[in-house]
Amino acid sequence: MAKTPELQAPANLPATGYVRIKQLLRVIPFSRTTIWRKTKAGAFPRPVKLSQQVTGWRVEDVRAWMERMAQGG
Image 1 (tube, helix red, strand yellow):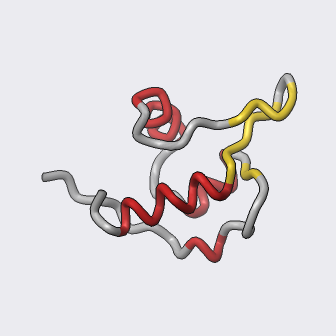
Image 2: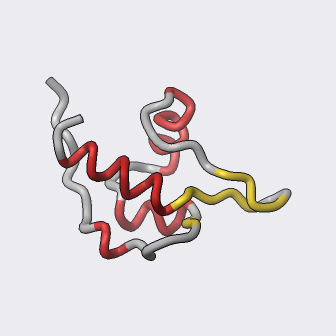
C-alpha cells in the first residue's frame, strides 16, 4: 500500500476561485510533473484553461481532492 504524502492545511488555499500550478506546489507535496501525470490519469482534478496561456485549477476541486486523500481515498 502506497504511503499518502502529508498535505498542507487547505487554509493555504483561497476559499474560491482558481489556483495556478505554482500555488499548488506550495500545498500539494508533488512535483509539477507528478501533478500533470496524476491529472492525465484522472487521479487529480482537471485544470481549466483560463486563457490561451493560463491554466488553473478550481480551488473547490482541489479542496475536495485533499479531503478525499485525508480520508484515505
